[in-house]
Image 1 (cartoon, rainbow, N blue to C red):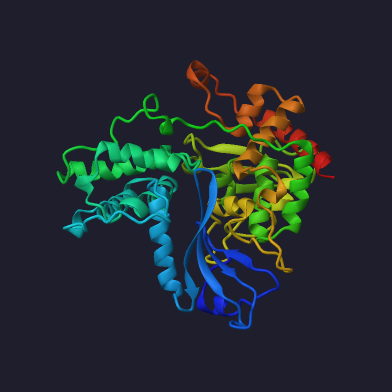
Image 2: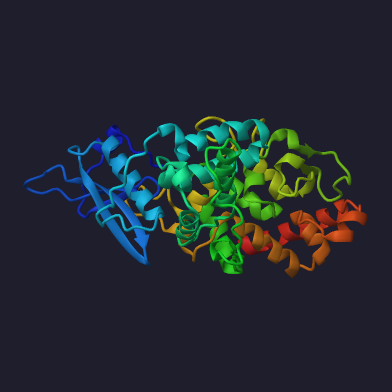
Length: 414
C-alpha cells in the first residue's frame, strides 16, 4: 500500500536498532532515529531528499511534533519549487517581491485555462496538461505575475525541468497554452513560450528511449511483480502491458464495455474463450479506434470484473498511469514487513512501464512477426500514401502475432 503521512501514522512509527526512512512522494520523507536516554521514543525528523548535480542531498525540515506535518509539507513544497527552478534548496533563498495583484499571477491564469480546457479538450489531453502544470509549472510560477515572465525565464524553466530527466514537450505545450489564454485576453503582450524549437532549445528535443528487458529480466520481473508490494490491480495492469504490447495509459483505463469474449471476427480457433479488446478512438494516441486480440493469458489478467478492469481502491476510477510508474520506481510501497526497503525497479537497472511495451515489440521481431504486422499491433500510424490507400484491418495478422508473443513470454517467465 502507498504511504500517505498523517499525524496518526507518524505517531505510530517506532524506533528500531538503526535509523530508517519512510518516503511519501517527491522526496518528502521521515527518518526515525534509534531511541536514546534523552529521547526513549526516538527522534522523527522530516526531510527533503533530492539529487542535484548528481549528488544525493538531505534537507532537514524539522523534528516532529515540534514542526507539524502541515508546516513540514509547506517547507517541502518551497524546497521542491527551488529545486525545479535550478536552485539548491540548502542555499539561502533570494527574496522576491510579492505579486501586487493575485488575479494576474500565472497560477490564476492556469486555473482559468484548465476550466476552459475541461470543456474544450478530450479528458485524456486535459488530464495530461493538468498533471504537467500542477507537477512542474505551479511549484515555480504559481504566485509569479504572468506579465513578468520573460522568454529567458521560460527557456531556463524548461531546461531546469529537463535536467531532472523529464520530457518537457507536453509541459511546453501546456504552459504555452496558459500564456496564449492570457495573451488573447490582453493581459500580456507576448507569449514567452511561443516559437521555441528543439533546434535551438535542446530540452525540447524528444528523448528516444532504448530500454527493454532482457530474457533474464523478463523472468525476474514477471515473478517479482507477484511477490512485491502494491495493489493487485496495478500488478495485473503491468503484466497486461507486456502481453498486449499496448501503452500503459490505454491499459490502465480499460473498461469492460471495450472487451468482447467468445465472439468477434475472426473467431478464435485455438481456445474456447476468444477475446477482442476495442480501444475507442478518443483513448488512442493517433485518434483511431484500435482492436487487439486477447490471448488466454490476457483474459486471465483481465478477469471478470465489471466496469473499469483496473479500478483504484480509493475512488473506483481507473488507476492512474503514474501509479504504474510509482510501483516500478518504488516511490511508494517501499517498505517490507520486516522494515527493509524494497529495491527500486525490482532490483534491475532503471526501467519504466512503457519499456514493457518496447520489450513486447522486441519479442515480436524475435518470433518472426513481420515488421508491418508488429506495427499494426502497436497501432503506430502509417505514413503518407500507405495510410491513405491501405485499408486492410490486419485482424488475423494481429491475432497470430499476439499468440506468438504470449508463447514467448510464457516460455521466458517459467
